[in-house]
Image 1 (cartoon, rainbow, N blue to C red):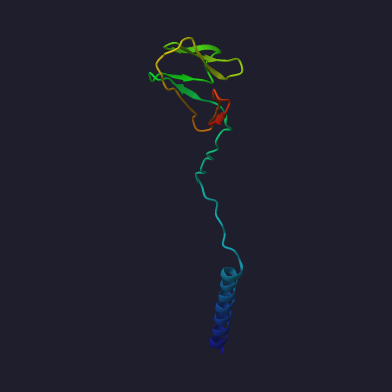
Image 2: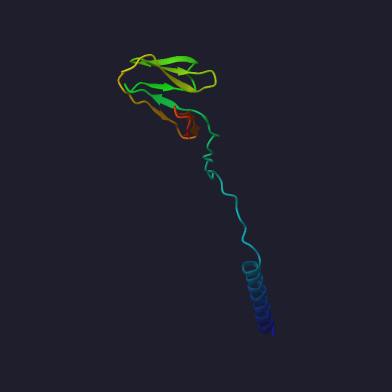
Length: 125
């Protein structure tokens, strides 16, 4: 009779343990332990655009237009490159028959600049 009781106690313990483990794994979320030293990626936000441009002259020299002071920037033959008070560039040709040279205006990432050409058309970059 004692053996019969021990068998019932053992069976009850196994059933209780089995029921608890079933409940634990089937109906509850597992414990989420905090992750230590997890690196958070940095955001690569781009700063708002501004009036930033670089003027590259025909001889290869460059002028950063947002830092350049107003007035005479360069001379190429008979032509003067002038930065006006409102930030515009002007080309003042003092003579006829001067050599044709090409300058380039470029904008860095996040930069912008507006050109008004001799015929009055506008180009934005």
